[in-house]
Length: 276
Image (cartoon, rainbow, N blue to C red; front, side, top):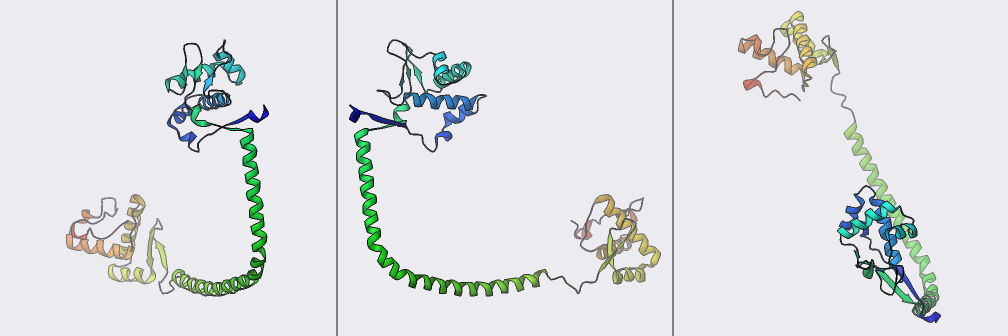
């Protein structure tokens, strides 16, 4: 009689939680509890003569309260889950109260005790055969392993030397790239907002061209405009020259100087002066 005993198991796919029905269930308020209850129903169907057919006894079907008791699940959760499972077509409750889960047929696997014993015997036999093969090949492996290891070590040393030289070259190239440019003269902050940057040579050129008072006025106006508008320029020196040149040619100070002394950016053919 023991030879006729069968073992059953539940087979869940790796994509179980990617199933649309399961995703929809999990989106509910008690979705996680519904899924656990569903898995308990599947497990309950394992070992039945007809997998997927759930009934307490021939004369008595399962009720929601009975299912709540044997699965340790809240009764309200059981009732709500059953209603949802029925709507999704995951189970069916027959007229006599029998619960039928079609999917259980696809998920339940079984094996008799004798088949299990034969399977284990064959597995042990294969392991012994593999062990014998290992014993035969061990000697050959030991003979060649020393030569192989030495060859591998020599190759690694050569590769390490080559990579070290390449790394040194890359470091030198990187140092050249990040090396600060010492030829660029330092710039100082000007204007009351400390946001106009000019080299001493640039500031002196402006003084020579416009005079000290007018240079200070131009610098302060540029600083005020940058502070109020948040503008940025590639070269403050070039900006002052370009705007002052346009002032002379245009003859209308309001084009780029407002009534409060703020500088407005040029328009028309001088609009190509880049700001960012």
